[in-house]
Length: 136
Image (cartoon, rainbow, N blue to C red):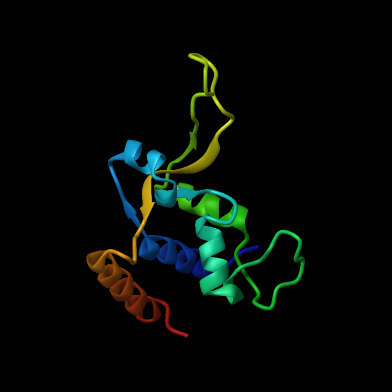
């Protein structure tokens, strides 16, 4: 089971790499903006790449770090912290009433874009603040 400290750190990481966006239509139309709940473009995957010692993979029953965070635990914690999961669907080509199954993603959340100088500054500032908020 994930420790509360690790869950809070993972949520702080999520807040450091994403930004709220009220234009959810824009988020759904630009694939690089979509923050998925699961898979290679999820917050958990970004956390696994940036801070691998804090995550526990579903097939890994023993983690190096006691209290490591699983993808399910992180998503539940983010949902309790105000993130809203929704299903992004698209209309099937050539139909008026048929839709794809869709993917589950975080509503009104998008990745900060490091190609944008202002957002790169935000990322650097937010990452610099993390160690001070979670010493040790």
